[in-house]
Image (cartoon, rainbow, N blue to C red; front, side, top):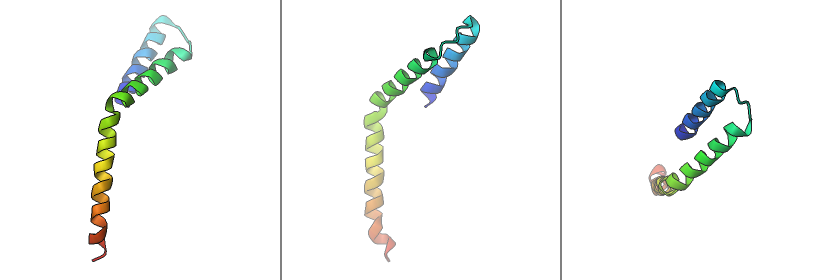
Length: 65
């Protein structure tokens, strides 16, 4: 999200400086950035989620005591 925020801020500053008010100029780079970050960080996020779920399921028997 931080990368998308930085790209959006950069595009907004560019639009203010050049007075270009094209809507797609702000959306397309943010979507591309978000997709790129998902491709790069996706495997790490899935492994973190998997390890969290595994630990959570292993704790279930201890909750019944």
